[in-house]
Structures are given as structure tokens and as C-alpha cells.
Image (tube, rainbow, N blue to C red; front, side, top):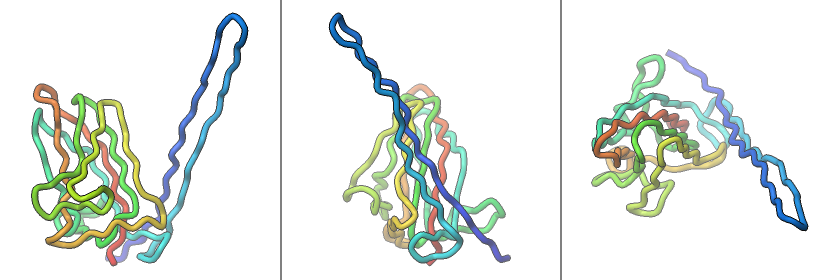
Length: 166
């Protein structure tokens, strides 16, 4: 089965910053946006694999996603990422979730060795870009761990991983 992927992202931050005192008032209202698009393929600026899911982790539970051989795409085909271009995570429910830090064969191209990132409830993390390459090594650097840090509440994690097969 032939597939084709066209993907992109938009990350936007809006703000209104106001100062009010007896002598001076002012407001700064603005936004910053970062965008990128990727066409189908495996070279720089392209992607041909995508994984998206909503995971629910029980209180204090952990799971490790195998980026090279156990995930499936929207059509049920097994995904083997060779490179990850972008990852997006958002969290509801639990107080926080830690991403990274698998005990063995950890996918760490996006953090320092043994590194992790924690997202608090209502928070989100986006990392990557169209030319970004975080290598995945099947059997050596392919496990992405997700840990629910809350001992009493389940975590709902929406995630998207975009990358290449070569």
C-alpha cells in the first residue's frame, strides 16, 4: 500500500502585558508564530511517517513507545521511524507527566543522555521542525518513556510524532 504524507505545524504565543501605576501606564499586546511544512519524503524538510494517539496512563503508570517497530499508523501499518522531525505532547488530568528516561534503549536525540522533560496539567510541549533530525536506532535508541507522576489521577496524553522511514 502506497502512502503519502503532507504535514506542518503552527506554534503561536499571544500576550497582553499591562503596566499600571500612578505615573505611567502602558500595554504591549503582540504574538509570535513559528510555522513549517513538510512534503512527502525522507530528505531534509520532508517526512513520510506519522503517529498520533490519545494515551491514558493510570495513576503512577508508565509506558514506553517503541519508535522502531511497534506503533501503527492510521491505516494499521507498522511504523519504523529512522528519524523524528517533530513531536507534540499535551496533558490533561494528572498533575504532571515526564517524557524520556527509558531504562534501556532510550530515544534521547532530543535531550541530553538520561534527560527528561516534565509537562504539567494543561501544558504542552512541541519540539522539532522540518529540517530537524532526531535519529532513532532500532533496538538501541528507540524507546520513548511516558510516566504519570500523579499517584491519584490518570493522565490523558495527546501526542503526535512525525518523522521518516529512512
